[in-house]
Image (cartoon, rainbow, N blue to C red):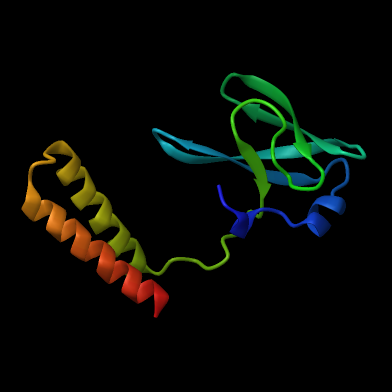
Length: 130
């Protein structure tokens, strides 16, 4: 969850009952999760959203100013479209980093794999920042 894809105050103010929104839940073991919900009520201080999950239908309250869920585990209303899609090369680099991390996490005494992981992260950051 981050500020870069959170709905702006203007976007939150423009929501009306019946609008579809994307909900981003805090990362867990499986990673960040996204769900689709429907705005059912807009109040002065909160937006009420209905979403369906594996365990039924949920009604959740989000702040009108910031779009953050008021109770339960952390979640927020976000833009559905990514700001900038990843290229195939960036996805390959990220997959390589992920693979190296998994290899290192299985054997944290393996200094060579840690060095490879460090170098891969450095290369990835250099290509992303220019």
